[in-house]
Length: 84
Image 1 (tube, rainbow, N blue to C red):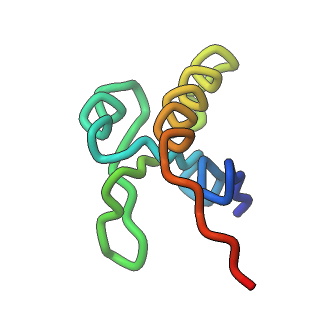
Image 2 (image 1 turned 30 degrees about the vertical axis):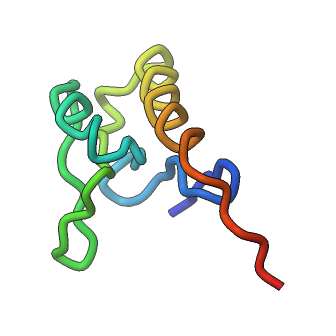
């Protein structure tokens, strides 16, 4: 898949099940209530704060709303330290 970053934090991406968005634990219930959204699991482990979205439920307008939701969460995360 492909992953997009914002300030060195994972924002969203694509994979076999569809689109992945990092929405944060506080917005997980809101995200899961949207059409086409489901819990994200990786190696059979639930990834809290991340959701998969079925692309058939994601027209251009919905995609912009998903990106905005993920961006609000990720933009508020602290800056990662510079590794040397």
